[in-house]
Image (cartoon, rainbow, N blue to C red):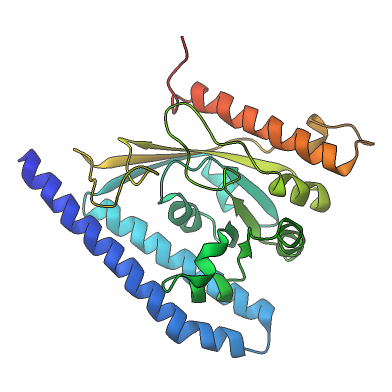
Length: 263
């Protein structure tokens, strides 16, 4: 029975990835031209953000219904809240972006520049007006504009999936500059996947022995003045905020049991 269940999850996972890829390609080919031609960029972005949110909600629900994954969320009210916000999260799996976009109604992401040339993603990232990480200065400016428009910025400051174990990659400072520019608190989010699936070292077909459980924990917002003095120079302030937020998230990953306790 265990072997049958694993085979079923492998087939179901492959089908889900195929649907995701096909839908992404169709979105790029069919929806992006309309979004690009629409005369009002603000309303176009709102519609696209809503479509992406609903699509990923449906995909997450389908993955749970067919027995591939489970999803547990704590602090959901912080994720559903309207208005500008910066969500900063660790990045253990490939599915983190999908799950957060399914949970956050009006979101904008910082994504790898490589996705602008990906055949499945190029139309999505452009139509949704996501922010590329290619140019640090443009990242900060674009992120500030999205926050001013009332969007929630989703940032994975490690820049790639976490190395595994009880470590995180060093956080980049782009999110800290955005928060300082906008003057808004940071909302830390913890993500865990047990057993590990879709990590940096795993392919999509490395299906775990049982349905994986994704846990999302939204922590209390962090006010910037908790980490810096009023007259701190911008560069030093961003460095201090980035380091403090990484330490805060790491500490709570241990406290929540997402990382193993150090001896």
